[in-house]
Length: 326
Image (cartoon, rainbow, N blue to C red; front, side, top):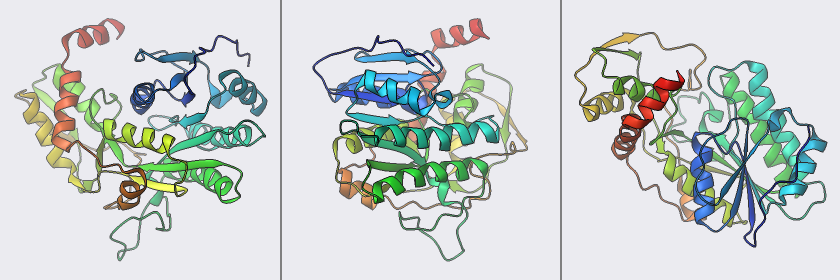
């Protein structure tokens, strides 16, 4: 894989965001640019990025360790945020390649005698998996029992980072994120998909079988935690990043429908197989360590996140663009 030396240079510290055009990656790029970094986003697909951010198109999951080393030597980042990952409608091979093997190569090149680089790796609370009946709160010390291919591949990536941190080879932290919602949620996600269909004002809305509670974190709050973790080097190897309060999934779906104002009749359909929260059970996530270490407090309640999601999903120009491309 050839990398051309067309990386933006400035007097500001450089930050590299892997997966920078993804849902969370774009918000991370914006937050880092606002914090004073010269941001290079690297991704497979193009997307609009905020001022101060530059896009480099490449598939780093397909790159060799030597390729990645040459690329880091071009960017010369002070910090790397790994926001890449395979989640929706992908194979087990794709998950292994993006969620484990890419992490291993990133850690290898960052620790290969280069100038000091801090790594912030985005993990998932689904790495904790199914817990015994007596475990009511998920802390960073909770033993992991992942039950899905996605969760197992994410845990494998996390352990690569934490092992390197424990061996004092890496300055890094894993942020275990809960499910994110908010503006521009992807169509493949539950709420992003429902909002997109509601924007087309259907008479009938198919809703997957819903049960239980989940901790939903606004994507803007998640990005804020990432930026704070970038700027603080003295952190534990793993931090939970969530709202810290579970919400009824069915209740939030009903609320989104009310926010939309679309008079639909809902029809329940089976939930797709292979979802990332399958058999995870209720998850009450302890975020006290992130609050204390990062001085971070989530600012958006789920209702605010849904209002912001609906505003972006019902944007008329965006709908026209989707229709033209579809």
